Length: 65
Image (cartoon, rainbow, N blue to C red; front, side, top):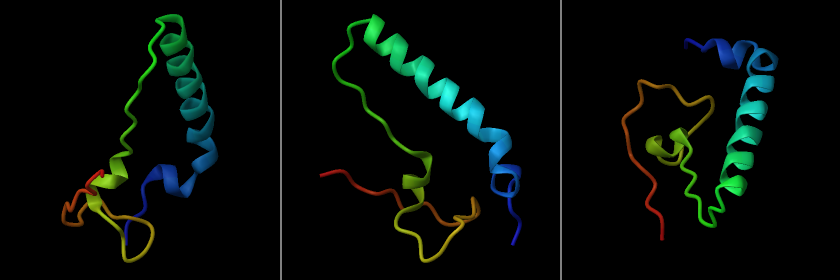
């Protein structure tokens, strides 16, 4: 199985992810936005049988209720 760079070296991607998330929250608060929809991309693959989730898997989106 092929692992992406972010799985092999997660620390390299951590700072960018956290800083980007904080910038998004700052912008949302500054814009007085009160509702935000967050949809993780992994939810497009459904409930996995195992980890990591391979991008080649069939897409079976998780339905929100």
